[in-house]
Structure formats: C-alpha cells, structure tokens
Amino acid sequence: MSTPAEIKACCAASYGQDAVALLLGESYHPGGLSLTRTLAERLRLRSGDRVLDVAAGPGATARLLAVDYDVTVDGIDLGESTVERARGAVADAGLAAKVSFHIGDAERIPLPDGVFDAAVCECALCTFPDKACAAAEFARVLKPGGRVGITDVTVARGALPPELTTLAAWVACIADARPLTEYTATLERAGLRTVHTELHDDAIARMIDEIEARLRLLRMTAPERLTEAGVDVDAVLRYITVAKNAVASGILGYALLVAEKPV
Ligand SMILES: C[S@@+](CC[C@H](N)C(=O)[O-])C[C@H]1O[C@@H](n2cnc3c(N)ncnc32)[C@H](O)[C@@H]1O
Image (cartoon, rainbow, N blue to C red):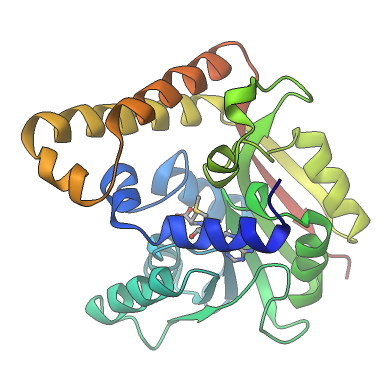
C-alpha cells in the first residue's frame, strides 16, 4: 500500500513523462479542449476574470482560457517537468502576461485567499489522496460568489475490477475516482454548493479509443519512440481492454460539475 506522499509523487512524475504526451496529445483529460470550452461556458467566465487551473498539466486549458475568454490564469501542478513544459508553451504562444504556472500541491495551493473569480480542475481531483483538503483549498482561494468547475472520472461504488485498483490505475485517474454524488458531497462539506452537473460518459470511451489508436499507430510507424518512452505496449493494451469493459458496463464514466462559494 502506497502512502499519500508516494501516490502524489508517482502521479506528478508519471504525467511529466514523454510517453504521456505521446499517448494523450495536448490535453490530458477526456473530452479534450471541447469539454474545456463547455466547462468555461458553464462557469460563465467574463473578460478580465482571474482563473486558477488546479493540476494544470502541460497548460493547454490555461492557454485556451486566456486566448478565447480573455482571462488571466494561474496554473498549479505538482510535476516540475510538467510545469516547465507548460511555461515553455506559454512563452512560445506569447501569453506570459496572461498565464503563469506554479509548482504546487492541490492540497496546499501556494496562492492567497479569496483572489480567484473561478477555478477549474480537470481530471485531477480523482488523483488527490485527500479530496476534502483539496476541496477546502478550492473554497479558500475563491472570492465569495466564485465558482469551481470540475470534470472528472466517476466510478460506481465498489465495482472496480482488481486490475483497476492498482497504483498505476490511481495515476491513470481510475482507482480513486468516486461517484458524482461523492464529489458533490465533498465540495458541500468544504462550503461549495453544486449548482450544475452534466454526464459526459461518452468522453471517457472516446479517450480510451484515441489512446488505443495512437498506440497501435505508433507501434506500426515509430516503435522506437514507444521504446524510448518506456511504453510496454502489450501491458497498456491489456489495461485498455479492462478499462473499455468497465466503461461499457457503466462502472466508469465522466462528469462535469460547477459549484459555488456563497457570497
Ligand atoms: C490527468 S492529468 C490532467 C492535467 C490537466 N488538468 C489536463 O486536463 O490536461 C493530472 C495532473 O494532475 C497533476 N497532479 C497530480 N496530483 C497533484 C497534486 N496533488 N497537486 C497538483 N497537481 C497534481 C499531475 O502532475 C498531472 O499533471
């Protein structure tokens, strides 16, 4: 059994690997930037808002929000190489005045109280060992009336097959995912009232298909890239089959929710 610190370190290190970028593309959550736009609309972002992206990954969401919604964004992520990658992409896009990234833990956000109009957290709450603590941090950094928008993996309680309860499955956003009602209850206890929910189960099915397609294509066209990135193709394909079955039988899904801090 891994400790919370080990889980977090493993998560941060894993998402910094080139293999992840190879298999996931530019944004590391089901639904991609299209679902990020939906989330931004549900949050009713306005020009000039200050937005926090918690567990921002390589920063595709932060850049999109800055450009398409004219907001300023602070992204935090625990992975040092992930933050470096995100900073590089921001500099390349000429967005340094609007987007900045910080190395930091979602359970101890290194930013002041009550300064954000909105926060987003995509496909990451499921990986935080102390979800109550992260929710309290979302509430702390939001202004009164501020909103947090979350998209995340959902799981039917107690129904995961054993192959999907390992540390690797935790890092892959599955082993510690919760039912949607549990996410809303955790936010509620932190003082954040859920005002909107949507199911996007199709997004997780599509993401698994896309990962499989990329993997099979790379195996045919550039197997050396997979070897260099340390990807065990057969192991990933076996894992994909189990995950697909879990989605097909309704055990795994994906959901969007918006919660509000009282004025
Ligand atoms: C599935 S990726 C999602 C990245 C990004 N939100 C996106 O949708 O592209 C999960 C991210 O959470 C980060 N992470 C994991 N645990 C964290 C923690 N405790 N605090 C901050 N970031 C964390 C990882 O480094 C990784 O970049």
